[in-house]
Image 1: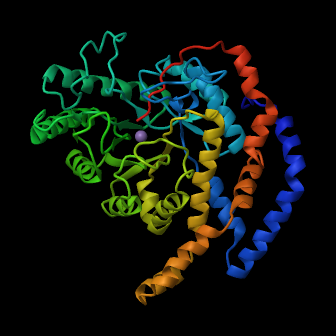
Image 2 (image 1 turned 60 degrees about the vertical axis):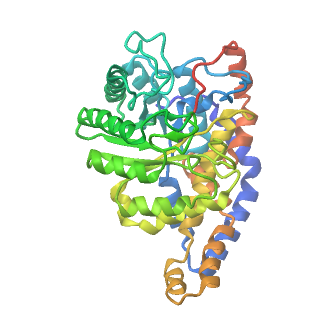
Length: 432
Ligand SMILES: [Mn+2]
């Protein structure tokens, strides 16, 4: 029996007030779909089956390098983070898995597994951390100030490798089958590091991690153009990332964080190329305007998110074999993290639902006829469709809320945990 942290009666009461409006909107959309020859129930079922993992670190307030402004009732450790993740899933029904970050979430793996099971949650990809020092960890006495897996000192590289293998071991204990590796290694000044030698050192270290992967595990490497290094970064773009995945082997894949590219880069084309190479490992969903802004998915450029999903739907069977991991990676500085994560998971599903509506036969025809206007309109028609009733229907069928943020606010959950959880400095707010 799954423990429900928000009284289901509160959810039902909120749904009751919205049901008539929802039913009317759904019927109108179904009628419109009928005219377009789209079976709305099939779309609803696909949306129901689409899930995305929430990051354990996302339920705490993030912060910038200038300041962090904690909110009330912040989770004080991983068990309370799991409670908040369970609330997100109870209402939104799109986020049954949590992505853990070690060392921030270190706890007894058996206790974590039991806690997650009691809440109806499971664990997605593990995340290692060699982008900051761990003075409290006797296993990691050496500093990562000048890098980790690419560090000039072999002792630091060995420590970073050992940490990653330790995260894999921990992950086995909680039922995870993947590790995401992001390193902050790079340089601030031309000449500071040898661009070739640092990459060779990285590859050698990554191969040692790869050799320690269990048979059924996957290794995701995540590229990022800059930050914390501002002149060069060792794993800076998808080209380097693909090179790494190919060097390592069949269990290595590339992870695409939507915020980790140069401004105006065509991310959907990168996704297409990685699908072609059969090396698309998964996503860190978020949105950005300037850099690695880690804003809520779909909040700045929903059309770009739609175009990414358009590539995923277009890939069809290939994607079923690749099984890319869907994860959110955001930093919540001015919102209640639970509300941001409910909204983001809904927006990700929205982009997916819209991509399902693209008339692919017509699109291909327009492309082959070089009809740029009609091809473009074909995508825009799908993108313009308001699929809100489909998202609500998918949640309702799984016991969730028609309007999950409204139900969350009606529940008073934040005030309740604010009383139970005295303010702390929080545990781990850094985001990659
Ligand atoms: Mn990321």
